Length: 125
Image (cartoon, rainbow, N blue to C red; front, side, top):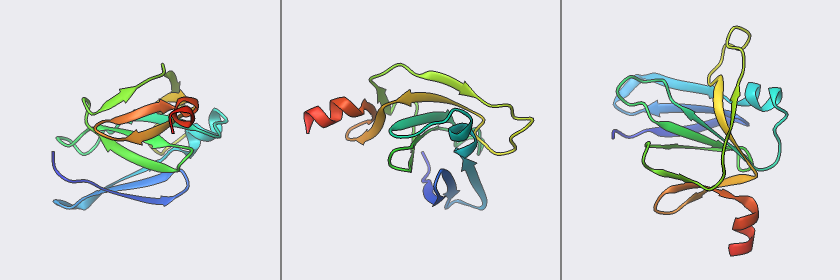
């Protein structure tokens, strides 16, 4: 898979650039979802990157860390079931407008990107 550069711009907002596509950037704002569902603390929002064609992959925004991680479909493990969230894309003009919510989770980077329970993480440190 071709390289991707993640450049967080401000809380809840992320910009992805691709070195081989100098005129393309993907700007995402997770704040409409965070605000609509009153999310706070440790949570992760997983979504499918709809662009650019041919380089699509999954991404996870870790709300507790305010960090974004792109990953391939077979590069993640999840230890808790998600809740499905969607906001009206007629009212919100930013992306993403739909995500899987993993409450009380954080991203752990090892061999795989893992969405792990915050409580479990604290116990295993």
